[in-house]
Length: 452
Ligand code: UGA
Image 1 (cartoon, protein in one colour):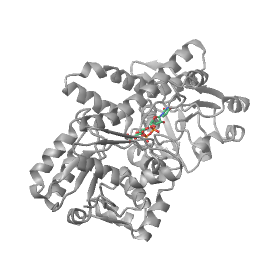
Image 2 (cartoon, rainbow, N blue to C red; image 1 turned 180 degrees about the vertical axis):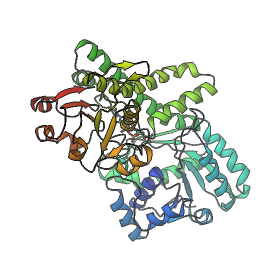
Image 3 (cartoon, rainbow, N blue to C red; image 1 turned 45 degrees about the vertical axis):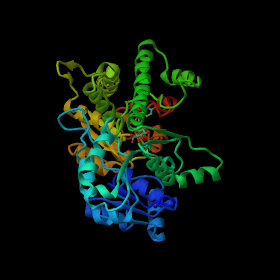
Image 4 (cartoon, rainbow, N blue to C red; image 1 turned 135 degrees about the horizontal axis):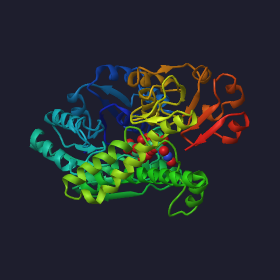
């Protein structure tokens, strides 16, 4: 029945599908990654990783060589091959609303289902509005041959870019949303490698088994909580600023209470990326459809606090450079601003909803001339914000600058030498949007410093 060592297919070789496919091959499963994009499939099959994720490319190559991992563009192929089909396609925000666009989920399920000839599990991984698993089940009933007995289950992922390999191999919990004992047993079989690795390392992986709705909600609830934590500390940063307090100390002090915890309390330019911003909006939109919008109204405020961080950097630039504000915001015409960091966070090349690029756009709209540098994100940034200038190094970005903004907490910026950099700029002004550089070093070298 395949329940001993199920064979796995991953639909969608984006960030999620690729990481999962590679890591499950590493755990010893026979795996196929499937994507409709032939170019992407060819790259992956050649051992070429289209994303930046520490450790993943080496694992990709090793498992291609071992023969446990391959890639395909064919639904027939995976239908024939796999016992479990992981749905790993994107669920972006719709262009016309805050809701999630489920068209890729719909396409991959309806294209796969007619080819399924034997019992298999369709396992949702993508982040989706609650109710999607039930809908996928109706799609399967409509499009798969009834005698195949295809079932559906949902198991959300919690991987963090930059730590994705660890998060898949060593998850802090797994969540199974199932309707039958067969599906539950299959999910245990699928995760056997994860449990075995944990046993060898003397860890335990908690398993939460529930219904479809709970499994779907766990994911968005977790992301909503994380986003709330960040906006909370950013709101406290405003209070600190109004009173001369220090939000970094405050975060440390409240974090010692283990009911609060020290993580996700770094104040700064706010959260971005392909997940938190879109997930909280889609969550609110879904709650409204369900008639419980009031319960999530606070997430609007979480989003607004976050958006204000980006505008705040622009105001800080104006204040530090003595520029006045008109009815359309500050006038920054001719001001040369160097931006260090364009990705949504350090150790990533992802610029989706990047706070840094949002600040860059606002600065340029106010008339500033922006030159940016980032260790990994330059190519994607050029696509999204083509009208900024891009430098090849920190030094090149800072040449002649009136002000420097650190907007992604890359290690490289923390280790920069403020005294040497002081020689390059027109004015020694720095805004640290990440609260990650050491203010005493910079002020010691004659810089005017402002943190968040
Ligand atoms: C996030 C969640 O952390 C993962 O658990 C989840 O699985 C993932 O979304 C997803 O839904 O797929 P990720 O988007 O990779 O992961 O990034 P995070 O590390 O969570 O950072 C999100 C944003 O919050 C970044 O812009 C980061 O700079 C910011 N952040 C994070 C802060 O501003 N302060 C903090 O203290 C922590």
